[in-house]
Length: 132
View 1 (cartoon, one colour):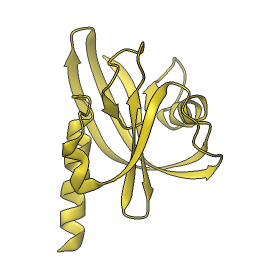
View 2 (cartoon, helix red, strand yellow; view 1 turned 180 degrees about the vertical axis):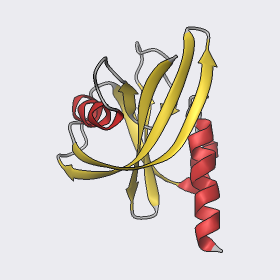
View 3 (cartoon, helix red, strand yellow; view 1 turned 135 degrees about the horizontal axis):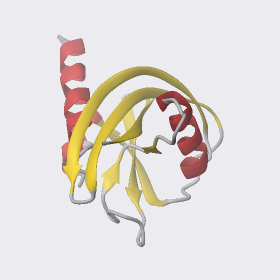
View 4 (cartoon, one colour; view 1 turned 90 degrees about the vertical axis):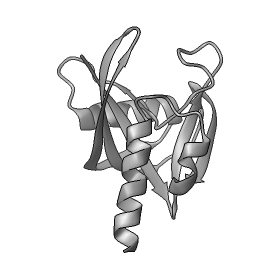
């Protein structure tokens, strides 16, 4: 099983999702940005590295929000989602061709990667719990 990280970055009431560019694996699908954890790397340091590589931002990694396990044809991944705050940098798309700030309630309208869907569902549940 491959451990992978995902950043849940809020901007006000909205959350950031990114779309994989043409030529990339799963091109055209939306995801929470992040990537594979390398040997000897913590999930938090992986996420900091990936966000700098993919989006050109320095980030502070907060609490773990969700875990999603999904079996793709190429293997099983465990997606670890963390709350992230942008410390510095301007969003620059290096491996994605689009990014959107969307309401949590609108995440289901996007073609999210299968492993990212449970994270979106957890965010919606959490939002509903907090509004009660």
